[in-house]
Image 1 (cartoon, one colour):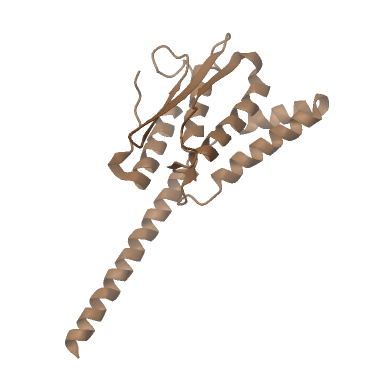
Image 2 (image 1 turned 135 degrees about the horizontal axis):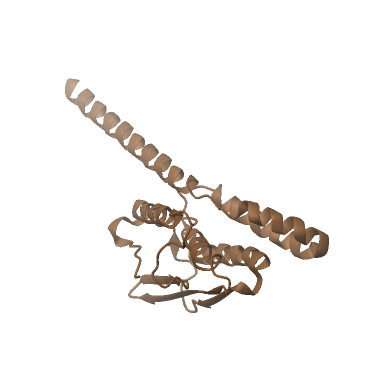
Length: 203
């Protein structure tokens, strides 16, 4: 039955094409996530080593926070994470950096009322927060405040991250890694949500 064979072959080819597209999309998404490099790794390890001698309980907490961040970075890149989980990772990251930077790093969180079950690509917020600290706090002797605010309107989440950089640029002597991180997050948002998701720099 040539007609039936042709139809079956058409659906088989279509199925194979769909699997290939999904496989390529998954590989691309995982590659995008793998490009996230927590550049604070070595600083964090030095912090843990110093704390282990003077404040072992805090050293244990920092180790657990660091392990959780890497566990997230090695997880399934195609499985969305909840906003609650993303914010938990942000707070873990901040706890690590406060032990290193002390009072130079101050944070403000204005996120009450946001739906914790809202979905995001994994590790969307933490890399942006990391850049805010790296470019906006570390180069400043006086440090500063990193502020994360959020609101929901008509089912759309708006999350804003601010640091003390007056021009929104890169601090002198700092690599232009912030643009890479923003491009990474932008691509992963697009891979999950298409044009409905946007990432912008208001400065």
